[in-house]
Image 1: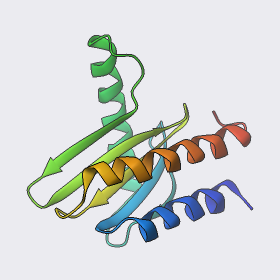
Image 2: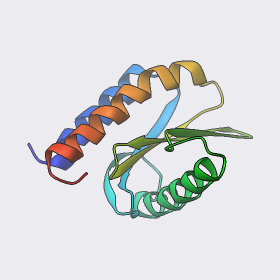
Image 3: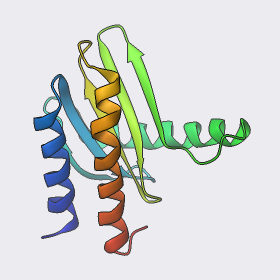
Image 4: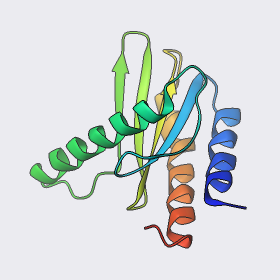
Length: 126
């Protein structure tokens, strides 16, 4: 199984286990799309924007002296966008509706992001 397939299997399970998730995008830290399960989203563009968000979040965490970036949740008028570090080489961005239980998102998505990071590391990418 290739890296894209292994990562896709992880994010597909996340979508199946977590109600109100509309999509998941996994990108490299430099903004290249790895895989996605996000119908209706321009995944390549979203991957690039997510990487830019990651870079800014890393700078904010560093400036605050808070250590390495782990995750961020953006609450918008009609939903949520959450980004999770997936090791050193990737990030996972989750799009969800306004009914999302953020605590459950964090509980379910953190281990998935960790496994995605491990997939990258085992492929020699991080």
